Image (cartoon, rainbow, N blue to C red):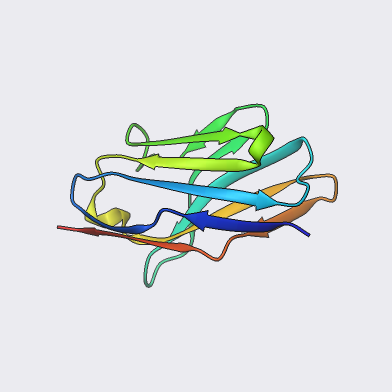
Length: 117
């Protein structure tokens, strides 16, 4: 069983920055994808950014150039540096990890990010 613990949400002004982190406890193997998704009130959950164990990244068009995802494999930890935040980035951000063997798919409890205008 894998548990994901997220840190770093909060309230920030328009144009500000936040850094989210997510640590996975337990074994996630060496072939996985970790990432961040978000869900705003009344909207579906959407991809923000993902990174594979090999370092391949994928970003939503709405955050490309403003957000950066990174990971430390030895710590089973993924980070999301969010710059130039906008009110429309306001959402609950969820960490996810999926991969092999299994396959497996786990979610964190979510952390609130609020950007005030």
